[in-house]
Length: 421
Image 1 (cartoon, rainbow, N blue to C red):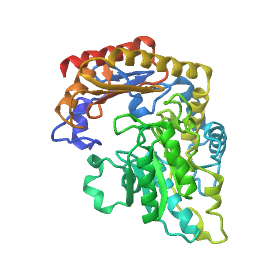
Image 2 (cartoon, rainbow, N blue to C red):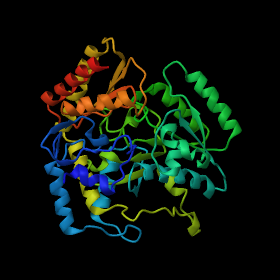
Image 3 (cartoon, rainbow, N blue to C red):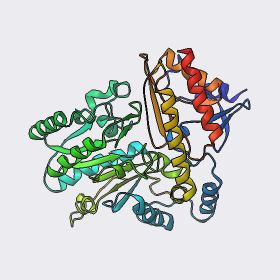
Image 4 (spheres, one colour):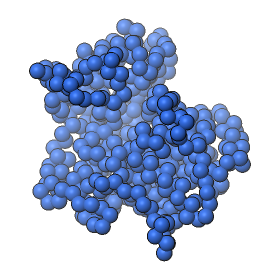
């Protein structure tokens, strides 16, 4: 019996209507940018398995470091203990994070990194005797699937059945270079009517919304306004972090830095689940008290798992290496050239890129999960490339180790796909 057949017996996959899409492709091996299925077919992983395996699958440098750590210390609870991998990771992260960040809090995944950030913001004011319960977020933002993270997200395809149970959020459009005055007027209205605890945002690029890029100058004006109003700002860098936008973090492009940053995905190079919520010293100090109840009583069983920390340290070492930095610039230049070619295609509405992220919008209306999207996904897979369209957006987010030949194949298959639309 094949893996695909065995899978159907007990497994329930995410983001899938099993009555309509009964099969899941069985992957048995991965190396570099290549995935191999149980029939021996190979696929270029052109989205780095949801933006995680940025240094390639089964990277020898990372797996060797993880293997060594497994022989030394596999896991220990982090509430009462500490260990070298966690301490070392905090030191290495602080070196590359925006310079106002000073404290590191461990979580399990991107959603829980956001969950912790939301709770930090709410309790920060609560500890000061202020009850603030409302957040501001961008339209069409996505921050995760747990309840707090889902509450500040704005994609109804994920939130529909739960909207009556979510926290209060006021939404604003993303800045496009022309609507700053409109947004600032809206912010003044909201902050006068509601007790705001924080603003959560995906800096510069909204991933699940279709890799929509917004204006850095406008975002900086928004952040400056919140600073002036003593409202905390939370940058969700789960997707954008660790080099994908060309800088270590998307927040590096923006003068005004966030109070809190959420990290996951490429943090551990796709090897193990882990996330981090970093914050300023001021946020941390807001939880210091002789009253134990003012501490941050939020914890995950696998917080700061030593093996995951070892993977993250190795990933940062690769990220900051000359070779990976050169690769990021090489991919960025390739994307620029492809954009200049594809932007004039009659079936392409717009094309854009930032760092290793490339996206184009098709000149056709598509459901986020519909027949045309499924047809495109099948075409890509049949031609040996794993691309996962977001509605009418086709996007690329390749591992940094992709070869020129592999990347050119990705571009070629996208061009070929336009002929079937």
